[in-house]
Length: 317
Image (cartoon, rainbow, N blue to C red; front, side):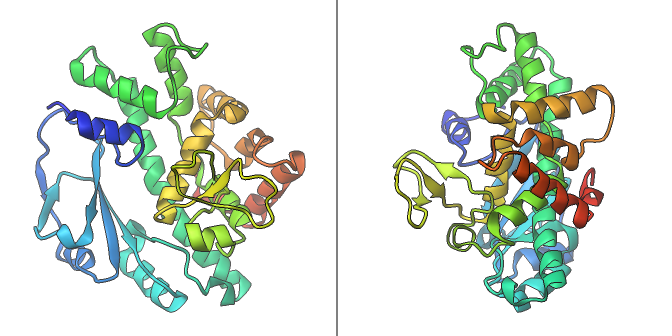
């Protein structure tokens, strides 16, 4: 099944995820509990993922009227909650399948230990979800055949992960695939959680509250949504605004997987893969020298956050 050009074009610029389908997906009946969750008035959107065909999409909650969905091995729900009192029951209700759309506004009122636990639980499910999508893509790259759908998939991955024929690493299909495999790989949850906490002040920074920006991601183009930092002397860039914190995590992961500044991080990860070792957030933090002007001090802060909060227990989940 071919992908309509409009859908493909929208995916390339990041509005929707790719829908690469090899064959019509069978339908899987959704449990009654899941249907109740989908109809919950506080739900925002649902991601449906199929690891076999890599088809996934964003659906408005109010559009889900059927008791069956296309074949999917995961169901991920974004929920709206304005306060900790609303957030905690929702997270307990959906277990490992859901996450909040925004950090609760009153999270800073919690005792430190409880604030950390809530913040990490919100981010961990998002990190796990997006890492599973990345691993689905990676597995398909390992099993490519010379088919029209696989060629389209390879082209889509090359564009999404910022590879083009002017890149010095490219030249042949084998070169492209080799470089893609360095980029299409997980960002350990421990790193996602540690940097999210540091960059957003546990979700309490102005950019986190007003723009769901947990990682200090910048936009340079005037046609993209952004906020200017207080007291900024230059308007060369602004801090990105996201619809939800899931989009912020996804953008952050793509940044680490594509930007030239994080080539060292990708090299450390590739070395771990070659040695069949674990992908450690603590170890990959050594590749973040360009993330902050503080350089080595910033790396030490990230590693301290991981070590102190025992965040590596989330890696590999």
